[in-house]
Image 1 (spheres, helix red, strand yellow):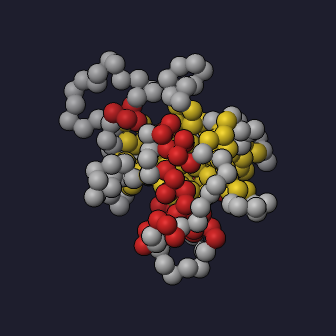
Image 2: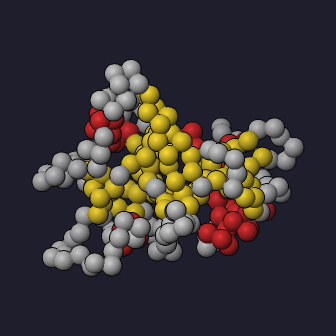
Length: 225
């Protein structure tokens, strides 16, 4: 990530993002970082017992993913860098919240070794007087649909996760190190002959309910997915 764009308190960030659960999500994340071997889930901890973050958090609009990607584009021994963006205004226009691959199981080859999420915020913070900084992202989770890629296209299908109790998107805070690279999702219209002309690249992720995971976007995506 670059130098921070601004600094907010947890509650200021929650209001700006219209995510009032944001402070609790960050505190739950910090609990898992401080007590990685705890047998008690942060979901079972009373809110008053979760660790607190008194200082302001650093806000970023983008991060850089760097990975080894031999290809015509990068060269046979080349490295690849790409910007992943999460900003309320991209080039003085609409918001841009990119999607990413989360490396959840390196032991599994292909798409099933990853989770897919949409980034809504990059941020970092320190806990109390510690020198350790926690780089994080606020994400919305997606889930794979079916056990195999789509028969007609060869693409995996995903859909946004929804909290069964509230009907709201499944939002979480993750460590930045778990992000592998960006991923391109293609809307998969269901039972629709025509697509509304008002839908744009900026609104498609909020409009459609089903998406193809584009493994043809570049050589590296094809090789890992």
